[in-house]
Amino acid sequence: MQTRVLGIGGLAFTLICVLGAAVYVPRIEDDLQARSEEALGAAGVPFQEVALSGRDATVTVLSTRDPSRAGPVVADVSGVRTASVDVVEPAWKEPPPAKRNPWVRTTVSADYAELVGLLPSEAAVEKVRAAVSQSLGGLVVREAVALAPADAPAPWLDAYIAALHVAGEGTTELSIELKGDRARLVGSVPDETTRDAVVAAVKGELRDVDLDAALIVRRPAATPEEEKP
Image 1 (spheres, rainbow, N blue to C red):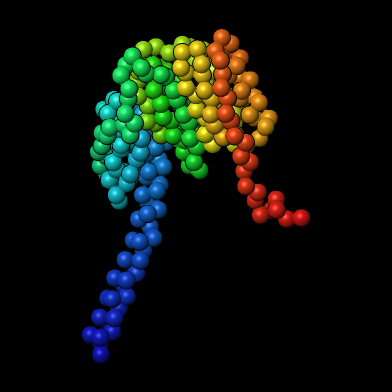
Image 2: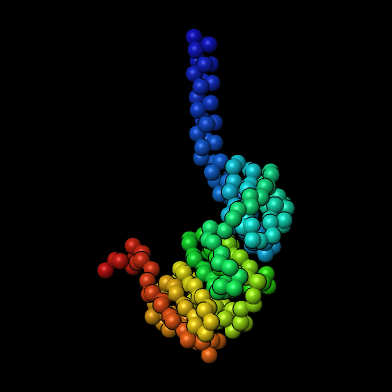
């Protein structure tokens, strides 16, 4: 009888441990992922994604960017046991250098912003990354940016940054592409006031460029409290 009770007790203990691991391990991974991404953002290190398996981290970096700093930054995060770097090719195919048009797009989710595009230099990438983070309330910026060999006109970059500053946290997507003396502005903004402010900010910088603006107004869904009569 005593052996049977001990056996049942051991089984119950094992079950509790398994269930506890199922609940707490994902929480630990989420916490380490968030703190790793914050550390990369604070250090200005470009990355595309951070994935955790227990306390072992893998940082994904595009082959077009320098991957050497990502591993050491994440390895220094308290709680991370190991940090490896996975270098991947860009999802898009870059055209020949003579046909490259500089462009950049910011897409916003609940927890982070993704910065994608073709920019002229590391300094330009850092300038845009800082503007994205600042305009979106300090969100972590995941980056998938390639560097173009030819310089883009400074007003083009300044126009996008000016648009970010007035877009605010309600904007979920904003992109701009330059083609010769024409620029295309596309995005999703929360209201007409923001839309008009973004267009005005871009026009204020690109005075000699023909601007094609296609900004969609998508208002945030009402909360249960706001839906009450």
